[in-house]
Each structure stands twice: as structure tokens, then as C-alpha cells.
Length: 426
Ligand code: GDP
Ligand code: IMO
Ligand code: MG
Image (cartoon, protein in one colour):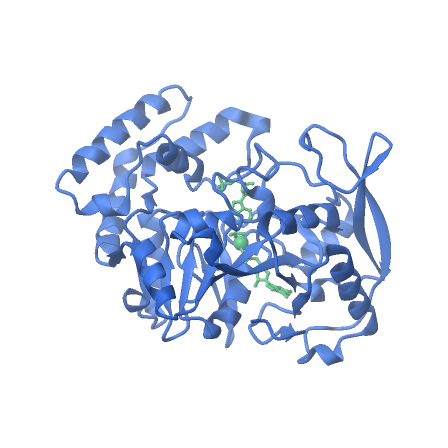
């Protein structure tokens, strides 16, 4: 069997959590491969709305194992809160979730360094989620990090103290006050919970499962345009959010990747700083934010909103080898008379259909094509055959431009508000 991947094609928050939950009954294992609690994946069903940060979005289904892979960074404090909330809802997390020994730990001082560094950057800040993601991946690649498996070593405390001493030195360079002792109380409570989980060699687990015919879906976090290599650097996250991240973050060989589901909103959003060519700083942007309830699932920050961006999507499809597209939040456009699609960029009078290298400092003006809105409430539809002609035209136009089939159209946050266009699994 091969591993299917579902990942975001824009700047995150495309609706990955919802669709992973919808697809979970087709899989035996759901695995996260990168990111950490900077992610906020929302699931809605039976009147319940739930946001997951570290835990894979298959956790609400029975008979499915959720794996937190080696590429993920874990904050024990946040993980404990997530587990507590799920246990209260009657979900037996311990039985349904395994954690990689090789996943790195976010320490309280990583969070402090993230906050201090963002403060020092002032106007040039990344707009990070302040969860300590950047500093933790820095320690990982700098070969100073602490991994989940280290919690079981007799010298864990010495390793922790050594790294924290280094972090304290670093924090001295910033004008930043903190009370570490207070943060450490919660950290050690979280560590105890983490140690009580099933901690495994996840690369062996997923490969054995594959060889035994089990089906696996890898769940991406963030989005392609936030990838540390291919996103709008430096306004990115610190991991590879793209399909290649599945290989390094779960131990899957490249030739074992099957379907790649690329998920995107029918429009576009971004939270945090950085370029966003189709951003609308006007009442239309405001209308999108309101209709789409575009406020961050992790930080509550208002999301920046704009029209769909085809050059950016084409780039994301290329980098990930997307085989199927999933279009989310079509219902958010229900009230719009006209819907705009960015087909090209105008850069100093030249029309281009790719993202320029220096997108951070280049003025990129979007060139739009107008499409007719459908002015219909999509949220009540239960079959793709019922969609209005204008939406069908929109979907077919995107498919033709992007050259990949759109197999799912989502028309509301609930599990049930999901319209299948074709058989999803080939
Ligand atoms: P993720 O990070 O990719 O999992 O996405 P988030 O959960 O951060 O953000 C997506 C938001 O849109 C959540 O509040 C979802 O409940 C909501 N959502 C998902 N799909 C749809 C949809 O088709 N229509 C509407 N209106 N909301 C949706
Ligand atoms: P999900 O998985 C949207 C953004 C932050 C910031 C940048 C760097 O829910 O789609 P970081 O904390 O990673 O150092 O922040 O990346 N960002 C996200 N934006 N959705 C996310 O995750 C994000 N995770 C990080 O806003 O601009
Ligand atoms: Mg999110």
C-alpha cells in the first residue's frame, strides 16, 4: 500500500482538519508529519466544534490509529490540554494515538525566545503564532534539540538544564522579561502525560503497517506558501509543509507516496505578516472575513482575506505533485454577485503567471477574470448534482486552469456539508 497525503495549497487554514475527519473512515492510520501547535485544525460534527493542534484529525473515529510523526514538534503543555479536553468528551486518546520517539520537544524557553525575537523585530515581525516553533526547529537542525525519547533517559534533566542554560544566554540579548519557574511547573506536568502515552519508533510502525496492507493518510499542517523552502521566505513557518515533508516527517520513502490531496479555499486567506498579492484591504475583504468567519483557530487573530490566486495555486500543485484537488468554503461566496479569479500578476508592466523570487519586495499587481456569482445558499445541498450552474462553471474553470480534477467541494464546516464529485480514492 502507498501513503496518501492531504496538505494545504495556500497559507494554511484551508480546512484540512475537516476533510481529514471526513476521509478517516477510508484509512487505518492518520499521521501528522510536521508543524506543531501552531496548527489549529477544526472539526465539526453532531453539533460539536473541536480544534486540534498536535493531535491528528482522525482521533474522533474508532478503529483508527493516529500517529504524531518524528517531524512534528510537541509542546507537552498544549498536548496535555488537548488530551484533557478529548478525554472529557469520552475519547480514549491513549488507545488511539502513538507518538514518535524522534519528535522534538518545545521547551518553555523556546516559546520565550519566539516571543522575544518577534518583539525585537518590531514591524518586521513574522507574525508567528508564538508557540516556539521557529526556535525548536532551529535547535533540531542545530543538533541541540531534545526529543520525546530523551524523556526516558536517566540524564534527561541534565540535557534539559544544558539547553535551558543556552537559551537563558540567548534571552539576555533581548529586552524581555520572563518567569521561567512558573512555566516549568506546567511543562513538567505535561511531560508526565507525554511519558504515559504509547511512544514508538513511528517510522518502523508506519512502514510495517504499509507492508501489511494497512492504509495511511498523512495530514499536513500550515500550507505550501508557508513552507520554509518554497514559501514567501522569511514570512514562513520553519518546516517543510509540502509533500516531501511526509517522507522526512514520517519516514515514508518517496516512491511510497500515493494520492496527494491538495486543499484550497474558493478564495484566499493569510494570517501573520508577508506578501499576499490578492489581499483585499476594503469592504469586500471585510465581507469575506465575516462570511467565512476568518479568525485564527489557534490565535484568534483576524485572517487577511482576498480572491483566489491561480499563479500561487499552480506553483503549489507543481511542488506537491497534487493528484486531486479539494475546494473548501464555496458557501462563503454565496452572496457575491461577482467572484474574481487572479489569473496572472502584473510586475512592472509585464504579465507573468508565476510567483517572482523576490515576491516580498516586488510590487505584484493581480490581473483578474470576473466570474458570475451563484447567489444561492449552498449550505443545505446534499449532492453535487444540486449545485447551481455558476458554481459548476467556477469549478470547471479552475479544474481546466489547474489541470487537476476537483473531487470534493465543501459547502459548510460540518462533516455532512461535503459534496463528492468523483470517487475520491483511485
Ligand atoms: P485547517 O487549519 O486547514 O484545518 O483549517 P482551520 O480549522 O484553521 O480553518 C478552517 C475553518 O473553516 C474552520 O473554522 C472550519 O470549521 C471552517 N470550514 C471548513 N470547511 C468549511 C466550509 O466548507 N464552509 C465554511 N463556511 N466553513 C468551513
Ligand atoms: P494550520 O495547520 C495559518 C503562520 C503564522 C505566521 C507564520 C510563522 O492551522 O493551517 P510559526 O508560529 O509557524 O512560526 O508562524 O506561519 N502559521 C499559520 N497560518 N495556519 C496555520 O496552521 C499556521 N501555522 C503557522 O501566522 O505567519
Ligand atoms: Mg488552522
